[in-house]
Image (cartoon, rainbow, N blue to C red):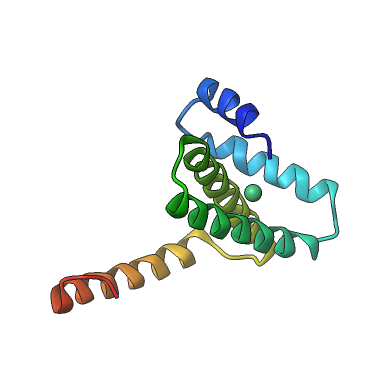
Length: 116
Ligand SMILES: [Mg+2]
């Protein structure tokens, strides 16, 4: 990974995500590559890269590690978008699951004062 190249591009980028553009690009890439088995593998690799970035951010902490964390978070968010299509998961299904998890978090905060 070229940290300086990413930082340079990041400084010029807009903060809001154009979800229509994201979905269009994901569909284009899926249509260009019919080997759907590599998509879940790519997603797992991106999640491993995020795990490593989290660890390095805690251990080291300089600006480059922070930017690496941001870059890997973006990769995982994009990878999750691929998973919606690959496994035919709807945003409503995930939205409901998020609400179940938030309800649990809320209960734990009330019961324990913290998330465990
Ligand atoms: Mg990555």
